[in-house]
Image (cartoon, rainbow, N blue to C red):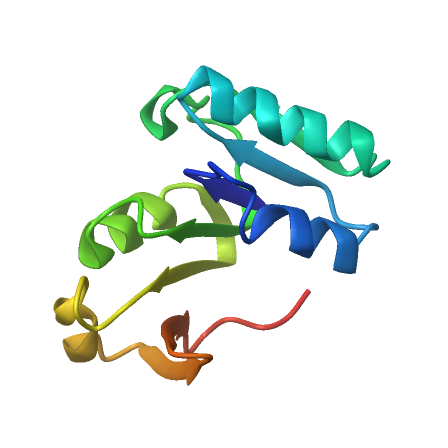
Length: 130
């Protein structure tokens, strides 16, 4: 699983805790946030957490993931476009945001919107849990 714009570790670190058998890669261009991700992984003993200090556009074009996530890093339609280029055939692109910040998502026919704790989430209708 790849999380773009990992910053403070949400949802990357909780996902890594819940799924220790799944390799997680956080992508974060800001040095102090990247260092925080590395520190979290080390301090919590999360062997499945890795982090790259780069922009998503700098990732190798020949490395694909099962799942790519992003939380308010891009405008949602742009994230779906970028994310689809990061996943394997049949992979999932998940976006986390709000209807206020990403209103275009409501028109995405292949997405399901749901709300939890005051936040809106979107998931591709074709996504299947690993």
